[in-house]
Amino acid sequence: MQSVDVVDCTNLKTNNCSLLWHVVVLTAFTIAFTFLVTWACRLILDYAFGLNLLHEFWLRDFLGNLLIAFLCLALVQRLGRALLLTAIVVIGFQLANGGKLSVLGTPISPDDFINVQNLFYLTDGWKRIALMIIAALPVIAAVLLTPFRRVSTWAVMVAMATSTLMIVRYSEPLQVALDQQFGNSVWNQPENFKKRGLALHIAQETVRTLAKVGKYPDQSSVLAALGQTSSDSTTTTERINTTNTTNTATEQTATSQTARNVHIVVLESFFDPVTLGPEWVPEDPLPASFRSLWEQTGQSKALSPVFGGYTANAEFETLCGFPVTENAVFFEGWLRRDVPCLPNVLAQAGYSTIASHPNVPGFWNRTLAYNLVGFDHYLSKTDFDLTDSVGGLLLDHSYYDQVFKQLDTLTDNKPILNYMLTYHGHLPYPTNDQYPDKIQSGRNAPLLHGYLNQIWYKSRDLMSRLQTLRANDPSAIIVIFGDHLPFLGPNYGVYSDVLNLPDDRADFTGEMLEYLVSTPLIVIDGERGPVELGKLPIYRLPALILALLDDDKHERIFDWTRNPKDTLIRPVYGMHINVTANGAQACPDDLSAPPDCKDSASWLARTRLLISDVFTGKQFSLRQLQGST
Image: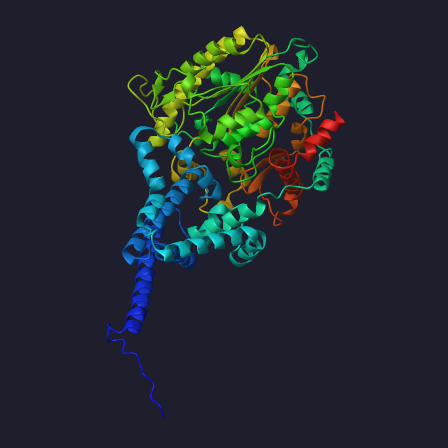
């Protein structure tokens, strides 16, 4: 019988053995290194960021990172360099994800890669340079470590590109398969991340995003949704008449037939800190004049779509009258068409429309967004003297003075929509010797201490300007509200202690969520004075303003977001708050919604369809609207 040769793997000079041994060593080192990096990141996220990861799902996290490691090895083709690139990519993204979760309560999403340039606008000087280097480091490392002269490298790149194209082509069935295998909670993205691991989470959400690209509602679906908007609901005029009890005696007296100016002041991170309790806030930072004015409104509250950041989403709702329902910055990826938002409506009525914000003009894509919604002019950072600033944040009194000085040159004797977004009060709440501390926090909480002192100055600047504005423009409609609650520490920080927030967002009650999105709202109807509005989702402000201008007789897109009668609906990424006379209820958006949430979930599904049609789709609804007017 013929003998069979056996390869002696102890002889490293044997070619076959060398190749086999090389593969074994590469694989073993890659697996071991990735295992260590995975657990190092998980422990850092647990103890440094307080994320409380679900460690029973560590294997998914590890396998996702291992795939990244093998891709790096295939691309770089040298073990040491591949492991270095793996560490840079995995650790960088894990820490960035931990930072976003601790500040905004939501993990990294595909939109963050599109909007990465906004990260640089949050800082200046060496900090901005450092952030740019950190963000660019994975790309720089990949370019420097990849041997582009090798044919095998280009073969790997072609294979990667082909795989990407296949994922794009079959994104819809792939999304379904991934959701079935790994699950998906629309309303609890932090839980999704904890169960998937970061690599799988980003991949799964990227596939979900790709499945939506170019998928716009058809005409029949849009018309059906429009047909549902006439269902039983409360109009804005009815809401004003039934809640504004202080103005009943003067309601029948018209203010003026002359077009009235509209001033909208969006206050950065403005809320009522006294609600945190005397243990945290022993002294009220808000002046008595503000308290008195707010009391005249019945302490009305705006319900914001965001917490701790993403001001642009509160802006979108203020200007366009639709809720933000996705975990994304609407100005960045969703507002793509010219739309009859409030500035456009008022411009067509003969108004000059001016927006101002003393920050970099392109932040959150404002330059394009403001143009699409109908602003004639946009005053940004270069239009202001920033001398009177703290940590790069222009003080509100200086901001107000400069805005009103420039208005006369921009209005052409027309009535104005003056939209002002303040900047002072922004994280990290810096101070300087020119504006020393005026108040102390009750407990050792540096962010709260800084915030209390900024709002001390901010609220007094507001009341001083408001006194002047009401005297100089007595018939004007003035709308003032906070864009969102301030960030006061990772994982909801101080709020977590005050409200006893559970670790899992799924366990938040409706009352907890409502608190986290509620800011003071003051609406002044000219000489009629403050309006009592109770609680009002920010997306209902455009309809309110037109009602106060007596311009709500014609159907507009803002009418399509009327809430069901005796109900307020506040979407908050992936879920919504259903506010009725019985209190606030937290409702998931998907089919798991309990019976009490079915009506609001149906309203939200219809509204989402119209949002897709109006702002990114074929705008069948706008054609229908134009045909009926």
